[in-house]
Each structure stands twice: as structure tokens, then as C-alpha cells.
Image (cartoon, each protein chain N blue to C red):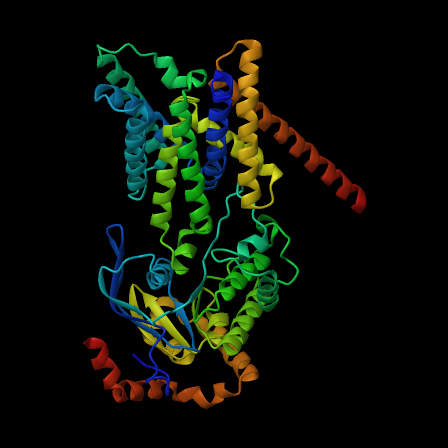
Length: 275
Length: 274
């Protein structure tokens, strides 16, 4: 399991070791190892039904593990943005009231969180009247009010158009920098999501491959799942990435070798986890 | 004052309505209307058992309702189709209850009183139980309100905030059984669910927040209880069903008013743009 340099000694926000979980009689996850550190953006990609959402739900504690171990950092605060939040039409709910769940927050805090998430001025609206993009921003604002150590976004850009979701991911990146929280995302939109990630985990019931976005995109396991058609999207990604972030250049082609070096270098973490 | 049977009836109706309104909102939001029905219908079985074992009706109904509510919420997590399951359980419970009552040869009971309530026969002791139960339910809901709302919106959202949605489900189950147990004397096994669902549905278009809807539902329930009692005196009709009728009429009125309001708003915006 490759880790980013310099983060090894810090205890992870969340770690999963040999995690297996079932829904009904079907095993959805088997032998998943995962670790998320403060300040990194980790994205999980995988085909439909590959267990991505279940993995999210395992991490928040909604699905029990059949095997393996889940560890949260002590006092971990999670901000969770679910894949879909259906609010029953019989339930009246203003944005302001929604932000006060489950903990009541002051008007000032609510306004600040809304502004932060790009949803300023929505406080008085009914949740049912919001557009898809506004709804996602309100969900994000609510997650931020918990001052999360870890932000979990499950297909957060569903229903947004491409510029909308690109803007949303830029916002996430910005929040990560401002709050210093870890971010764990699931997405279908490979190229957009990969551009915004430090680390990508390709999941198909088990971890197929993981590492820096470019490493994963060139991995045979990833291509087997998504085909080589995504290379075009990645070209776009590379372009955008170079454009926005200078540090992208320093990784570049070395990622592959780098990860393997790192695997070899880091026996301490592995033996520790095995115990 | 409590010596007047009408005053006792009014207070009994108020107590049940005030607790049933807010609880009914949660039942409606969680799409559990049938769940309330099944629990209420199980009350008939509770009556039969209470008579057979010579314990208080309140205790018998409370225990059986609790069992029924727990059974339903356990089974619902196991992939049964909810509407079918509740249809089976609700009607079986009432049928078994009625059959069980017929076996009790020694007792002569007025079945109608348990099916449709007998609010005019409420004693001071009943009143104490009704208000005790109602206050308990309201306290329980007030205490767990934030958690209940979060879990109602989305169980995973609650889980991620460190709440246990199953615990909130249990809170709701207990509250439901309590309301059924205190309401059986007032509106009877068949109409308890109506006193929860109809005021909540009536309050919906009048409210902008969950709390607003819960308070409005309690108010509408209280209005229905008092109105039904008054109506039953004027027209010499059964009291429990009269209360439900008033609630249904209020529902109709708010529905029409809301439709009118929406129509006007649409016309206004149409005129503004056109």
C-alpha cells in the first residue's frame, strides 16, 4: 500500500485492515486495506456495483464489518455528504433548519458555512425548492459545520453538469487547503475527479490498484475495468493539472517507480498493521 | 370540575391529540402510516389478553403494541415488502384479537368501546393514565427530537454524526406503543392511527419547518378532539369517529386553501412574466 512521503509517522484519520463486508448474502467487499491521512484527497473509482458506496458506509459505521478492522482516529469528526438525500415531500425543511441537524448552530455559523460552500443567500429557502447544484452545496455546508477532520463525499456531483462538477471539485480542493481535513470521495467522473485527487483507489470488491492518479490510469487493472478509452480524458486531466498546480510536475512520470520504492521502504507500517 | 364527564372527556381528547400530533408527523415523514395502523390494530389483541389475565387494559395494550411495533421494525430490516407485511400483521392482529375476546365466556364486554373508543366513560384514573402517557411521549420526543429528525432524513447522515438510527427507531417504537395504549379508550383501536396521520397531513401545507408542523399538528388534533366532542353532543353521534371526521374536514379545508394559494401564486407569476 503506497503512502505519500512524510505522512507515514502521523496516525491516519481512518484505517481499514483486511475489511470484508456483505449486504444480505452477497459479499460486497473483501480484504480491503485503506488508509486516509489528514490533508489528502483520496478518490475511489470503480464500476457500478463495485462496492464503492458500501465502502463509504463501512467507514462511517453504517455497515458492520464481517472481517477485518476499522479504526478511527480518536475523536474523529466526519462530515458526510451522501450520494442522494431524498427529503420526503411531507417534511417541511428550510435550508437554515437543515443546517442545524443534528447539532443546533448559530445563525452566524450557518451563514458562514453556506458562504464557504458557495450557497450564500439560500438559508430561507425550502430544501425541496433547491436546484441540484444548490442542494449539493447545502449538503456540503452542513458537513462543514461539524468542522470535520474527514470529509466524505459519495457521488457528490450527481446531477451537476460538467462545468458545475468541475467547480464543485475545485471548491473541495480549496476547502481541503483551508481546513486541512482529509477528503474521501467516490465518483464516476473519472477525469474530473482524478484531476482533483492526491491518490486514487480503484475498487472492484477489492482494491485493484491504487496510487497517484497517473499511476492508476496506466495500471493494467484499471484499464481492464475502464478500458483505454479514458486515456483521452486523462490527457485533458494532465493538461488541466499542469495548468493549475505546479507541484504536479514534480510527480509526473516518477509516480510508478516512486510508489514501489515506497512499498519496499515502509515495512514498519505494514508489520504494525498486521499486528 | 373533573366530576363532569364532559370535562373529563374533553381533557382526555386533548391529552391524546397533543401527543399524537407531533408523533404523527414523524410517522408521516418516515412513511410509516401503515406501521401506526398495525400497532394500533394489535391493541385489540392486547385488550383480549388483558381481560383474560385480569390486568389493566392499559398494560395489556402497551405490551402487545410494543411487541407488534418491535416485530414490524425488526422484520422491515430483513427485506420483506413493507406494505404487504404490514397488511398481513395489522389485520391478523385485529382478527386474532376479536377471536380471542369471543373465547372469554365469563366477561361481557362492549366490543364497540374498544374498536371505536368510549371517551364519555373516561374515569379520573383513566385521565391520569392518559395525561401521564401523553407527557411521557412528548418528553421523549422533545429529548430525542434532533436525533429523530436527522435519522428520519437519512440514516447514514445520522450514523456519520455518531448517532445510532436503530436507537431512534426504538424511541419511536416506544412512543407509538404508548400513544396507542393511552388512546384506545378515547378513539379505539381502529381510529388511533387516524388521530396521528390526519392532523399531521393537515398541518403540512401550513408549516415551513418540522417544528412548525409538529406544533400545528398538535393544535389541529386538539381542535378536532374538542370539535368532535361538541359535534357528538349536538348531533348525538359517536364521539371518537366524530373527532376523526372533524380532523378530516380540517384536512380538506387546508388542502383546498393550499390549492387556491398555489393557483393564485401561479397566476400572479404568470401575469408578471406575461
